[in-house]
Length: 186
Image 1 (cartoon, helix red, strand yellow):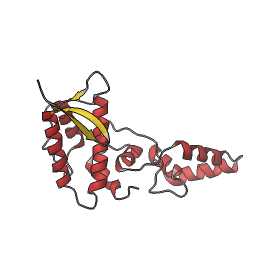
Image 2: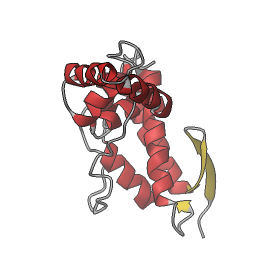
Image 3: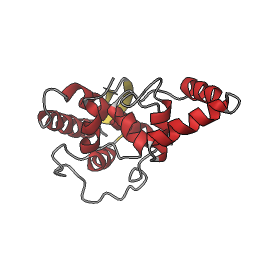
Image 4: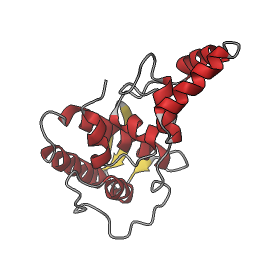
């Protein structure tokens, strides 16, 4: 019989084994100590959000308690800010997190009006100028570009943190990738 702890991660509640909680707390403290002061809050918020996403994937089935094996999988996937893998599990065989999720967001870093064109360009990995020219051409042809832009603006969320900016570009939200966008987070 093991003790369980209710833990709040990124404003979400999870039930964890006591040893899994201790491992995660040690990892977060170690991670926090290795990043610079200026980017600490943004990076730690994005890191906790990513960990909570992983935990929700794990608990979506019949499993309701986060165990040490799950925490080790998350730690080995995310890694440490300096690239070391001192906390990684030696027998990590979990593969569904290896492929980055690519999602459509509006890009706040390269926006002219609403960030729709720059978000589409990042999603499709193309030049933003090409997307903008397409929208202008569609606008000239019966104002379809204006309506398409307005619809994208309403429907597509703004990438607000480093994890979402990584997802927009199809990058794994590791420390290296998140730190590229953390200083630009809105």
